Length: 259
Image (tube, rainbow, N blue to C red; front, top):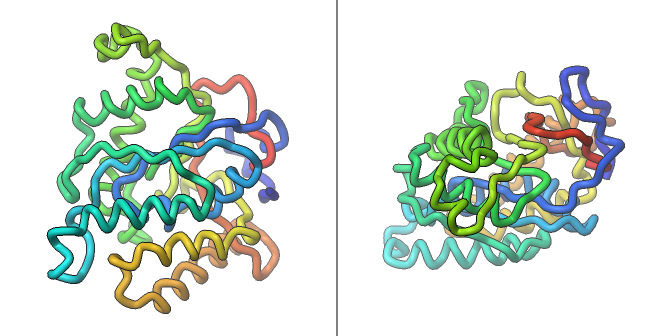
């Protein structure tokens, strides 16, 4: 999978060190599909193991009043089907209430627990900073995911005395190499992934979330336009599509190859 030249402030050289496992944190079913499903599809196509952790059940989502009693079941089923389209079958939920998510110690402890269990090379998360150019990217639950994951990654994840009950249960401290953040301010972007070959897979995944999109055609036009705009912002040739990230070195001695 090709990438653009990485800006000088990027903390890694994209030509070395492969990613083998990725853990993605989002607030609601469909967040990962809008934000990074093209990159996820590229990862899984290359043999990377990708897992999702969705912090809420999306119980406040949807548009049809008649679906209220079954909205959680619908959204779980939609996410499973959408994830399968981009090669992901391992999905975890924290079952927090949609619209009430915060970076509490309860949430951070569960983030630490899951990272220590899976020990990924990359944690992918929503960004903790608000995007004033496109405020829809900055739902309060999205910001809470970013803040909770960032706080959990350092220092609690690598501190054996933080949440000691985890270490006592056999989940040893872990130093994460890389944190990738998406849906943040454009000025934070330092890595663009050319996902032109995975646009249709991303859109297919988004289409699965029918409970959330009353105008599917408008949604698709918007997503295609945004991806083309990101490609242009990345300096890719006209007609190429990209996804953007803010990549942060946490404890990396190596670098990321091919992504």
